[in-house]
Image 1 (tube, helix red, strand yellow):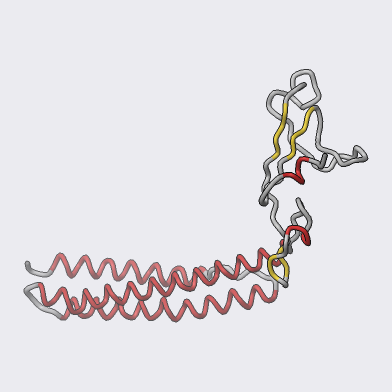
Image 2: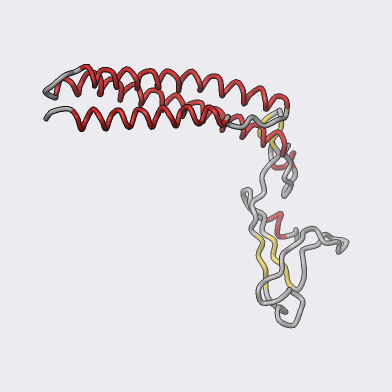
Length: 194
């Protein structure tokens, strides 16, 4: 009869053990296992218990793409961990770049609403709203321009195997712009006659 893990279907390896870790035909252990809360299997507290190991196993992924289970070997995990980390970091960098873009586009929408829609709907002078709208538009441009600079800086650092931290002075500039725009918007709203 073949071993139980050869009978498992899909990508799951099921190993049933009694009083000890799974082993190959020569009796050499093939896997390590953490002790159960009731005691280690094979001890008096854990004697007679059955342990089912349902850890997923993944086929090897390389330059050629996804390999079959037979060519990768059942139960083997074979991938380049450092390469995978770089790929995930590049994808995260791309998501961050797009987030900066979304923030810039949202700021353009706020700029349009503040500079054009609000003056049409309110009574009073339009210039304060237009000034705040233009300021929001400038901040939107800064977000999109900085998105490109930041994305390139992180990619270059990844190519060198380094880390590119978010610059403190850039964070301060964006925070200061946000505070100034917030104060300006609140001031215009409070001083504008209804």
